Every structure is written in C-alpha cells, then in structure tokens.
Image (tube, rainbow, N blue to C red; front, top):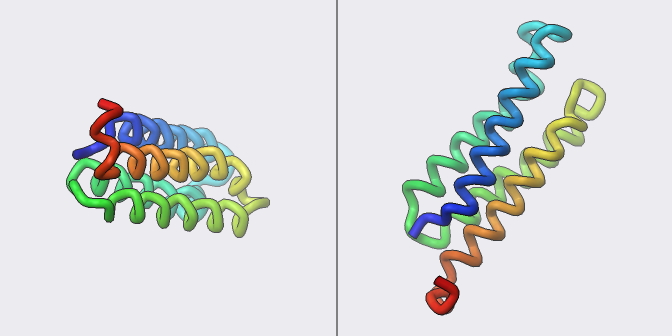
Length: 110
C-alpha cells in the first residue's frame, strides 16, 4: 500500500526542485538543467515508484534517489547544489515514512 505521507513529501521535494530551477533559470539559463535536472528526474521517479509499488522496494528506491540527490547537491555545491539539499533530505524522510507505513507489523497504526 502506498504511503500518503511519503507521496506528499515527494511532491513537495519535486515542486521545490522545479521552483528552484525556475528561479535559477534567470541566472544560469539552460545550464540549470545540468544542476537541477538529475534531482528533478529522481524525485519524479521516486513519486512514480511510491505510487506504483506495493512492496518494500519503493522505500529502497526512494532512499537511493535521496542519497544520490544529496551526493549530487554536494558535488554541485557552488552551482546551486546547496539549495538541492533540502529536497534531497525530504526524499530521505519520505523513504523513512514509506518504510514505516509498509512494514508488515504496521497494521496496528492505521
């Protein structure tokens, strides 16, 4: 079962990255795709996996995307990557929430 809390955080992360990209477009122009593109695509993939998968694979994919986004934000630190750390950390929190909601023993929390 998909986690509504995780989906909401992923959507916030995706909207945040897209908002940052629009803001940075005025400064960088098309180079914004190189800095913000991987995180935006990763967040879109995370959202799709969260909605489509009913297994524990979804939190793992979301965590991997979040970790890759953190790494990408640190690698592109001077090119606006510092701003990417907030959406990347939101993806990691979404992975935790998704994992907690999908645990077999989590049925008592609903």
